[in-house]
Length: 165
Length: 204
Image (tube, rainbow over all chains, first blue to last red; front, side, top):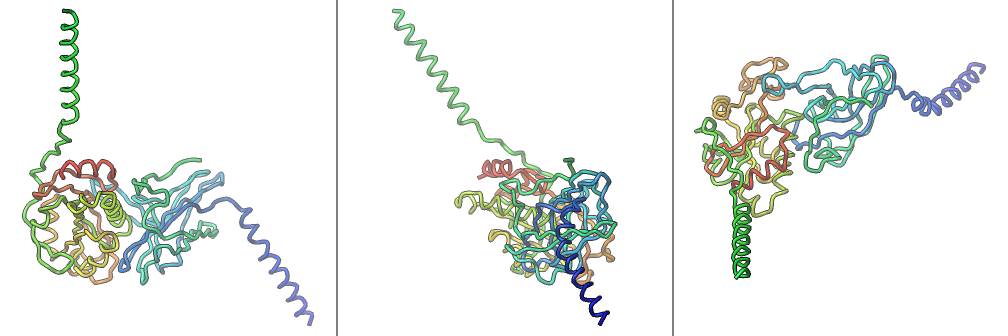
């Protein structure tokens, strides 16, 4: 029963750790995700895109190497290149965010591509998008599914990529 | 006497002002040049499975563009922006305008697929597809370039498996086509809505 006692105190400790982990994570503000959306697409679409901002507060560059979403089994990060007058989508293996910079994933540029959709996310619902860095730190954000960018008035798509803050 | 002179001068000045005002107000709207190198005969299949030719671009002002529905970013963004523009028009104007989306991915974009896909954006959209040859011929008429990316393993999209996730590199112009089927102006896919509405109205 010493073991049981040991176990329960371990459990208590784990619970304590879980209880505090939220605030611990929040305190670790080296980087975060912000202000995003997922494009609402027709019911028979097989792909869609997620857009958001990656804020790197750290004094060192951030490298994102993985992406996943709650809506698809296959998620990749893609970039849109303008090459010889053509729009070309390329898969990115890593996403670099300079020290103390914000990287915007936005229409016409870098975006999270949700592939092999069996069911498209419904307009008005939300999709959780998670990015992970080289140290295994993962950040998730729940994004609304909508037809156009939240700030959209008439120019739906702003094409900016990176700016400092 | 000097009163009469002043009266005549005043009349002349008023007449000149009136003439100027009339000139300004009645000056023709921006006359868009006619692009004679683009457009021409083509045969395609619409979203209802009916064979159509270039006359599908006649009778209304068309916003024509090429793409594929597997595309996650640019194509739905352009479709959304064009439907936004169509909704901005007055009903009387909108009745004279149509969006025309041509798929260069006929293997995956069948007429039925295009029908469901385009309905989501706007009722007025016409979706066109066809055989690989037909699509290629129509694309050439408008100088549209599309290349299957090495991401996909097949070089001929006609023989590509149904659900393979191949992508295309492609030009992304939106063509403003007048009621006679003539190309009047090209826009990048992230066009300025106000500019396009202004140009479009000059054709109505």
